[in-house]
Length: 312
Image (cartoon, rainbow, N blue to C red):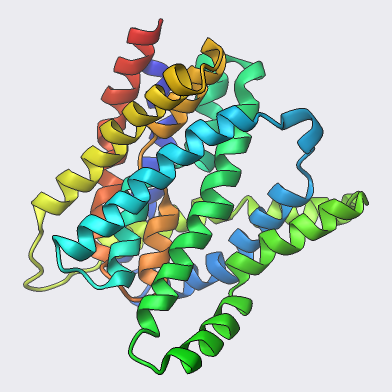
């Protein structure tokens, strides 16, 4: 548990820093949106481009691991979206954010140090692959569903054209595609460009966490906290996704213990800040998402520690 706490504690520190600066009036009410826009248009695209353009697929290609982790994440995401639309009567954009709340683990910020501490250097490849799946594929799917939901009331032909144009302008979709195209050329990135990408991309998670704290620090009169959806989404994230991933990795795809533990540990991580970032950017139910991120992060200290003890 001490290893988990050591990794998670800085996350609470960044959230608390954002909360305190908003409560004390150091940053104004526009800070949340502006900081979030910085992450969307600059920091996260740099991180996604760097992640894809510099990946050495010949060394990290583990298709069965990708299938186990990817199918587990996609199943929880898709099932939550369907449940939110059909049973919860939620609009598709909100349902897509719910899907991220339930199936989008914080692999980038927590995954790497936690896997290193628990499983060692040889398992770091699992964190990289999981980050690519969640950051480039699952996140992109959520954006597409949000945009489809926002354009659903227009004429189908106009909607298709407008949707394609909107997606083509979205830096969170364009960056990994451009990175993949560049990686296919076989050209390396100059040192100065790599340094630029590392510096800019490295600010994505800390800024998103501070933006989350800023949002939680806002005084909203009459705001009603809905505990039920928070508990359900956090439960899907911390119990259903890792359980399903274990079945896929251990029983269906029969991965070695190192990859099984890597897949389950990464699937058991709390909800990533990307879900909050997207909810705030599109002006959806950011309050629900912020609370899911916070609750799942707190609870994950116990659930991840329990899994590590069980797995030995």
